[in-house]
Length: 267
Ligand code: 6AU
Image (tube, rainbow, N blue to C red):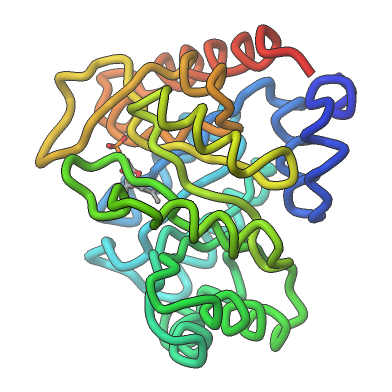
C-alpha cells in the first residue's frame, strides 16, 4: 500500500517526519487506531500491548496513572511498543508557560526521551510550543505536539466562542505542532475543525466507541467511521478496546472500520 496514494493531499501537505511515519504505519497495519492504554499497572499494560499491538498504529499513554511505575519497567514497555512499530504518544495535556512545560518533559518520567507526541492545551499561549520543542531538541529527538482544539467531554470550555479558532491559527503555522485533538463524538464539529485546519496538520479524535453506554463521567462517544469520514486521521480508542472481554477482537474490528473509512474517504 503506497501511503501517497492512500493519504493523497494529507500526505503531500503534512510534512513532519512523524506525520509521514504515522501515515506509513497506518498503511502497513491497515489501522487508524490509537490505543488509549488507560491501565493502572505494568502487567496489564504489557498484556494489552502483547494482545493488540499488531492492530494499532500508535500507543497513547498516561504515564502518571501507573501504581507500580519504575523507570526500568516503563522503558521495557516502551521498547516492546516500538518493536510493534508504534508511535508513542504521552497524553500529558501540558498547560503551563513554555519553560515549565519544557522542564516538565524531564523530571522522573522524562517524557522528552521516549514520547514522539505529547498533548498540550494552548491556554498559556504559544510559548508552550517553543518550550516543548526545546525539550526534544535538548535530547536530539524529533517530537510533535498535539494541541487540544476541541474536547470530547460534556460542557468543556474549549467550546467557548473563538477558542478553537485561536488554537488552530497558532498551531497551523508552528513547526512543533503535529496536529490537533478534535471531538470524535460530534462529526459536525469535526467537519468544521477540518475546514479550519486545512490539509497541513493531523486531526486525531478521542470520544469514539461503538458502545455509547460505556461513557462515564461526562465522556461522550461517537461513531468511528463517521469520525474518519468527517476528517479525522486517527481514532483514539480506550475502553472500547481495553474494557472488552476480548480486546484483540475489538482492536481488529476498530482497525477494519477505520481502514475502510479511509478508503471510502478517498485521497
Ligand atoms: O475511549 P475512552 O473514553 O476510554 O478513553 C479516551 C481517552 C482517554 C482520555 O484522556 C483521552 O482519550 N481524551 C483526550 C485525549 C487528548 O486523548 C481528549 C479528549 O477530549 N477526550 C478524551 O477522552 O485516555
